Length: 54
View 1 (cartoon, one colour):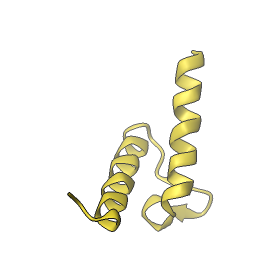
View 2: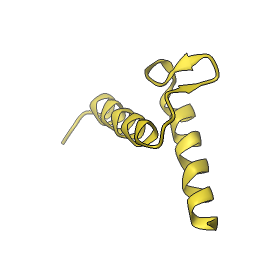
View 3: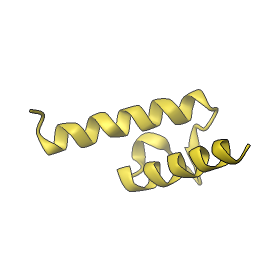
View 4: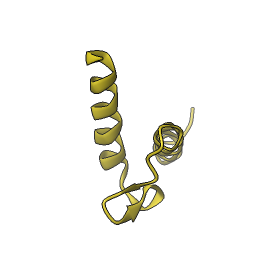
């Protein structure tokens, strides 16, 4: 079983890859890799909600 820190880093990488694939490279004035996991998850959830509505 992966350690919680490793799982969080893996999740963060997956979210960054997802956002990059959709043309999102920055949020505000920060690069994606500089953001906490919670901010990346919020952006991911917003994109998923928009996709479901379309």
